Figure 1 (cartoon, helix red, strand yellow):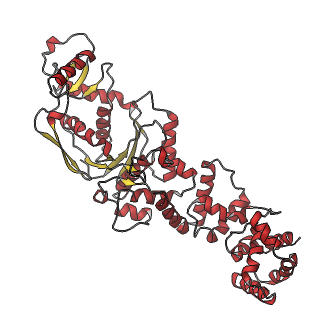
Figure 2 (cartoon, helix red, strand yellow; figure 1 turned 90 degrees about the vertical axis):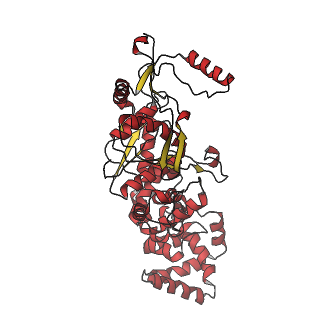
Figure 3 (spheres, helix red, strand yellow; figure 1 turned 120 degrees about the vertical axis):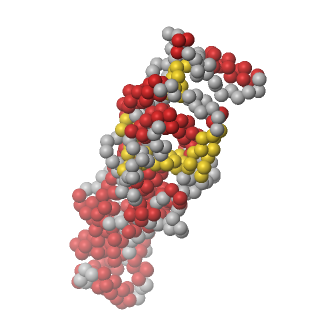
Length: 466
């Protein structure tokens, strides 16, 4: 086996990128990237009935959103069918596989009899050691000769050693009667040919490992390091499904979660590094290892996801955040920002990103910077304007006009004005919020004034005073 770590993510293109698949991809990506290795992508599109180009595109889009870049081209399993069949024919030539002419009816009858006699219903083909001279012209499948005694031990980095008695394994089919290779053969040949050193996948594949090891051993190939990770459950402890909410990675993009927060959360879902909850990609790559993966299923918790997303938004670069918000608007099918709105949003970012956990929350706070005059106040804001005489806003204008546009000077000017009028600043803040944003809940009045600039602030105050 090469010294370089090679991992792979191998989804079936039958739908979107499931959140469980996204985590599997992330674990493989972190493991390879943290060790200077390669992370490969293979689309397991051998099921022609269910595989669609749209699903492949959705998987690639989901990975792109999550920032999980892969090395080399995307590999199509279907396109390797001739190579997979070649391996089966090699095993046939070496006597490690055989042609089985048993019909479906004969197999059913065998099982029926075994059941009646209280024996194992695992099919034992009469053709396993048959003389080739007895072969007929009838259709046949190619089966591997499974070991019949002893045990197969899957040395798993997450589950520990898992022992399966060989008398529990049947002679697995490698080629169907139409000569097409089965999925189990394709997976092994592809993993070997791609140089995969570590197979990190869901523990629903654990039993497959024993059957796949038969092919590795028959071919004299190195068996990869196995790591079968527990599945993700919903908050109620049941397997994650539609009733728990969104299942596709892209649905989370369209709901306005930042990719960095999603990566951080998915990494913590079933893996841990001490008590660390919030971490960067670089830390995750450095820390991620197979020992840190837990044996029991992780529970998906939306509150934790939102909390981590809020922390990532708070430390994001303003320009990068603006770009990601624009991608979110496109993904959610919402109106895009004009160039002016886009630059206003970036300028306002410093006073928006502290306590927003999602992009819709951040955009709600950014409302004041994205609207243009005349401003329609909502119900609460309109009430705040009614409760103050227009005169106060009119009188305030020259005080603001003459202040230099720095935060401390604006604070001084407004506080001095409130004092002179013998009102608490809070009494003034409500109407100001209403005038500047048309809302009752906004960022601080001073931040809004700084973002809007002198001219726009005065224009909005003058509109409200009318």
